[in-house]
Length: 234
Picture 1 (cartoon, rainbow, N blue to C red):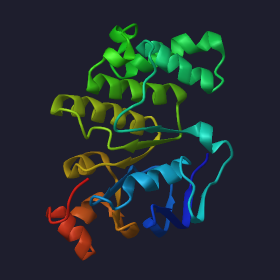
Picture 2: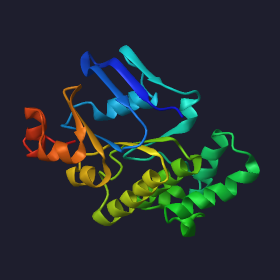
Picture 3: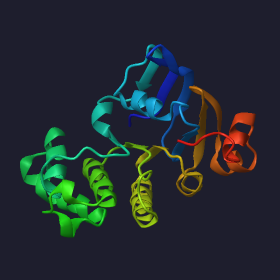
C-alpha cells in the first residue's frame, strides 16, 4: 500500500508565475478524487507533481509505501502511443515494468479485452480512433494493475459515445480497487465518477468536499461561481 499520498505546502513556479501555491492535502485510498477548477487553476500541474513528473519548487510530496513509481499510472488527454500495434504498446509497458516475457502476451490481451479492444489487438495504435486510442492508454494502465490511476482530462476531446466507453472503463478500475484521481472540465462527469472534489483556484486548494455536498452547498464564492459557469472551464 502506497497511500496515503501527502502533499505538504507544495508550490510550483514556471515562467515566473506561481502555478501551485503552498498547497496541502492528503489523498487516501478508497473514494475517487476529482480535481476541479477554472482555466489555469493548476489541476494538471498538481497531478503531474503527485505523479512525480514534476518536482515542487517548495514543500514536499510523499507516498507512504515503497516503489510508488511502479504502483501508479497516468493517462493523459492525448495519449502518447508507439508506432506499433495496439497489443505491442501494452506489451512494451509490461516489459518496462519487468513482467516476465512469457506473461506479457496473455496479460496484454486480457487488458485489451477489459477495454473492448481485443478485436483490434493487431491494428496499428496510431490508426485507431481518438476514443480507441484513449481506451488503449487505459489498457496499458490496466495491465499494470496500478494502486493509483491519475487521469488528466481523459475525455476532453471525445464524442459522447467514446466518453461513455471511457467512463465505463474508469468505473471498472474503481470497482477493482484502484484509486482514481482525475481532473475533468465536465461537471456531469465529476458527479458521475467522483466521490470527493478538490477545488483549485489560482493554484490554491480552496475547497474539499464530498461530491454532492460540493455541488449542492459550495462553501466558497469561487466554487459557487464555477458551478454556475461564471468562471472559465478548462
